[in-house]
Length: 293
Image 1 (spheres, rainbow, N blue to C red):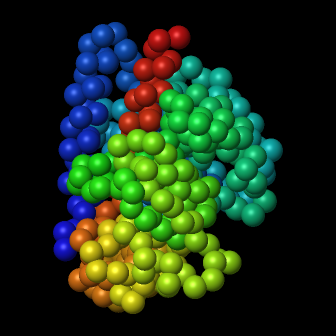
Image 2: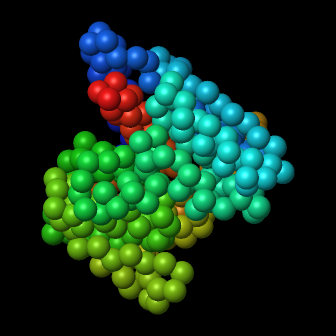
């Protein structure tokens, strides 16, 4: 069994981004600028945004965090997004999800212009991904693809089971794993809350990608020997063993499952760091596109 170290790989990629950024600046380009909007005070969301801002600072990106009260109206938020859309100084814009009930995630995603949608959620960018055209790939699936590539995990002809059909992870992941590419060419089964006999399906999988948001859902008896398991889950649960009083749990019961795997990602330290570096890669790509206009 080998643990897939997302932190180590993300650090490698940060060095690559820094080198690429220097070449871009030396060629007359400008420092990439990422703006992050967060609504409310959800602890998990605040942590994720903090990590993104810190990563920007470390690599020399400009970043702006815009904080709104959870009672903000949808109209007010959309107006702010439209304002940032017009700001030529901002290359990438993301709105941290989830949002309060009074605000439609879909309307927010559709309002961010595709050119600044470095999260890769806009329908136009999703459509380009489906067609295999150049675009911003959704950050978490993008990060998973990089992990598989850099650990030289074979995917061609393999049975890949994805648990979870969200537009953020599960659905785009199913497309990427089945397309004709270096990391792809898998036979993909996408399972969800209405899927029957999930255990029977996962036990036949060579690769399992779990993105349910259900702590420790995948147990040892769901997995065949030698499988590759990618855990996307990050649920904050109370803990009396940490200073913060919280700890992150994945969707995989790690101690049970790891013994059966050829490769497995931990939580934390697996997919999470890769999501952030993928976002930074997209932001640099956006800055380059703006420079070429």
